[in-house]
Image (cartoon, rainbow, N blue to C red):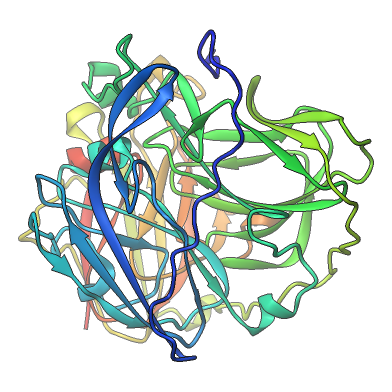
Length: 449
């Protein structure tokens, strides 16, 4: 069992990523500057770890925009290698998506410009360099990308950034005795994806967060390379999930745990009003304490609305095509539909503004090494589009999967049917978001025109 924290490590306050400043004063425009750079960080007391980060030593700032904004991001590469920046969950044309076709050379600046035309959501950004994504993310290149809109701004939800609206980037890492993050892939890492022995929250091991005596919104990103998390409170109390990958759910869903595969997001609201000042509890993953909550603040009186937003359901009758994607193979032989990634090959061709059903199945057996003794779950992600899940093995998806999803787990021997309308043109990726699988070739390309 993974034990979080390292012996002798003292608790520190949870780091809160900075909000990246908008350099364009125009009301409907936004301009940001982002630099990928090398650095060092003290994860373990007295030991400096070589890292990558955006505008800092590890991870990056939060980019916050509003629906309707015309956005430009200037991305400078100060690494000693190529990189890209993929806007995970953002619906933009392929030339701005930041996939492996848009590599940024050392010393160069890439300045994509796009209009935000999708609902409020918690998205994220990370590298997507061919065969190098896993290592670059592992070293620290990742950050959150918030979209707000008129609907989200009018809802009476906790929205004071860093006070009652908290970003949580959850990642696992292996540290050597010298404090370095070890990305030497053994056979188990190739098979299952790299899974670490310590869990970081916003780049910190075993941090604490002082919270008000009331409702707090947690925007959780599973930013790990491979690990699936089952999040719950140490008290086993219920909470409310209000959003999934692509934005708000129609109604809050009351839960006492939420499972997130790599790259999935969930916004949840935890009510601390029944606790006393000075009480503590934890955000847990299985039996691991990830983040300690300390009740130390004034009570707030947010009421969670019964209705959050309206989601127009996409009718399966509107689909003009059904495509099948099958996860297969293991280790270095992982593939989709029997094919491994070839950047010079387009695997699927689609017409712009058409609706399709994608059936994603998991046939990749891993024997007793994997989940359920018969395989492992693969998180499926497609670029430039948001899906609605129709069913899992013919059964209606759970309530918290009935919103917009850009990434979804597909369990062994399971078929997930999802529907989407492809409104943006260009070349995009679809792949397993276990980054070691993606880098090994469990990825394909689709072109929309």
